[in-house]
Length: 264
Image (cartoon, helix red, strand yellow):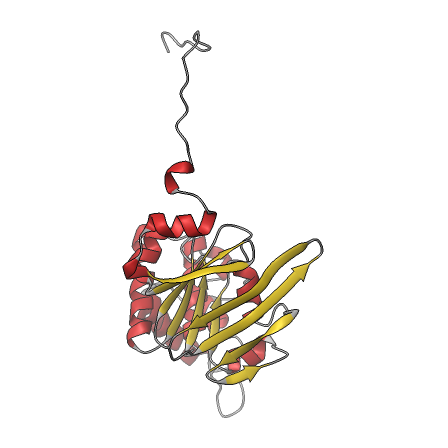
């Protein structure tokens, strides 16, 4: 199978914890690939290694056939890899437009920032990428959590990446905003952009993803076709037990009442 990204034998240890143990992870061009596992399974550690935020203890990373070494965030972005991280940062007193174009502001011939063009293009970018209709002169601190999330997504898409990693992107979003995000991701796939999608919400995985790689206790358990598996099978791989065993039914005999409310 052709791959756009391949991580081989990735190991990473922290004091007292083996976060990743010989993990292999490969993603095909133009697919939406889920990365799944319980909390502490190693998902975020693997992604932070790809982002250049952590250095692996051992292993190799290949992107479009090129072996990547000594990764740094700016080098990763320059290769066309974008990240929507779970931990989001922003400058509260910056406007939405300033946030979108930070470091790549349109300029006049004099070298000064072309503010009118910046805000005009910011409005167009927000509308065309994430369907967000807000004044780009609004300060980031004035936005809701979900609006800041959508601005963050638009900022990454503005760089025209060929691979985008979404780490738990739907947490602050409403149902309508989630469906809007899904439309964005499907559009990216149609354009040939590869997506890595991390979420604890299995219904999202089965709506959106082509394949899924499951991690457990820092190790890769399996890579499966989403169309050929079920939520129950995925949970079994993630936690090592049947879904019905998560909340086992207990046989209890009710005792005397411990609380009574009358005339409330």
